[in-house]
Image (cartoon, rainbow, N blue to C red; front, side, top):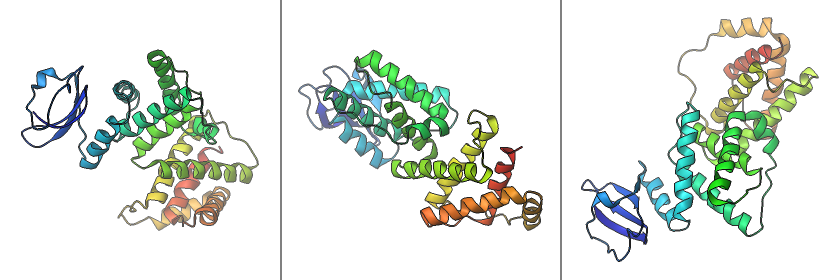
Length: 277
């Protein structure tokens, strides 16, 4: 391995014989080291490598700004998160979550805390990720003796969902607000409050998550020809639920200036029927 940059006394940026860059850590590893010097990999305690060059550069920059302990802690948390969910996570989660956790700890130490206006929605729409956020807060307190605001669990949950959906935080907030607005439309239409603990409601929210992702990221539609006979059958047999789906489409058109396709309206209708049995 050859040293590309000395980050600090404990972190080096190195490249292997194929030119792959990685960050390596070890107590005193960077002390009196110089660029271009070769170093024995046996001295490394931990290595961090991102497949994307942009992510690798961002990770290098982050390591220059946050304590190494925060990066290590975040890596441990992500390993636990991966063991609890089946959806693949974007590799950039290490960067975004480490940055958030380190900043949250610093804000807490300075007496500055943020509230999350979407905390209630996040608890309801992303319950598994929210529970993981709560777990992270407990571990952070155990490891750093910093008791973060309970609302930070919602922020961490959004980072996890963001990584699952492979999108960015700005879109993630839009997705959450769209889900919240859609459910308000649905409950107003049916004049009832739904059981947010039920399996069918959870399925509906999961559908809305991916529906919203497709909407905001303009994911290409399937190339298969849509079954118009099936569409007409659903419209005639589920008239009331299709009307609600149209109301959702109107809400999205007015609030986000986006059109909901006929196919999406049918899928919404089917889910609406399931939560109204």
